[in-house]
Image 1 (tube, rainbow, N blue to C red):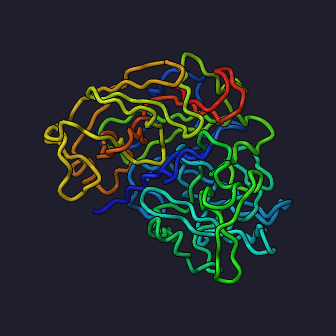
Image 2: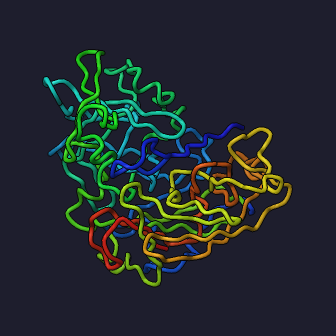
Length: 409
């Protein structure tokens, strides 16, 4: 079965807020890594349950999904809980499929009092849809008047050439693999300064549309699609992700997305090592097989494998049926070294298995050992998070580990 890659990585870097796109059974929350004091799979007011399952399409692999409640701004009754939302530490902002949204939200207006619409490029396509405002609740936290993107709205069915030239629009659940994506990465906005300037320096994410005629526009920081965590009244300096260890393939595993770092008893850094990141692109460095991916490495729950270049390609041949994954004849036990901008280093042991074998059972959604080729970056996708407690600190926010952006584990 062809299972979606959903390798999220924003296409334009360096503008201040751009980072990326065993036995079958069910695991409990156990075998957690060091750091933190444990979550509860959604038991606390800052603890949002996440589940690695096959998602809304029924064929997703290594995707961590959750639910969010979306309300019309200021309303406590005109609300909707939407499941099947992919948790993504490689992007910032909440994006929801129009087909999954039943609540009417306020449309953001721009130049000439025309609607603002966004084109967001991921590595395997683009999301096109209007910027609207919602009150969003997750666990006991609420982000009021949050700008979000609504993907695939029929009111904006014509995708401008400047957007479609960057990739095929993923404007349906079937194409996107989820009812939406919850970007809780290292940046406060999805674009940052690159979208506040005019002319040729503009990153080109935001448009104003007069009818179906859309043109690139500037978008202030306060109006951009934003990391919801920054809109919370507390627990707003980052997130902590906990998932159990996975051996081989399992049907599903459950964990926690805990809001805040060092703000409560359940999100302390503990013994986790802090790796500061390049503030312009949210990357650190990884060295593998003597090759340094300098300032080109990141942790990304939105990627469903570990993506990197194997210089000795004979040991990690690419799958016959899955060109985006490796298929070694035997499971490979590998090691790489991560290094932060602050000089902190740590070795990471990981496995690469035969993706065709690992995904043979369509009911298995949590798979450790999925990996694939990427010549430009070292993308530590969801398998990295299995059995670890991982922290993602937001740019400019104070934490016990210093100011973000950084990751820690």
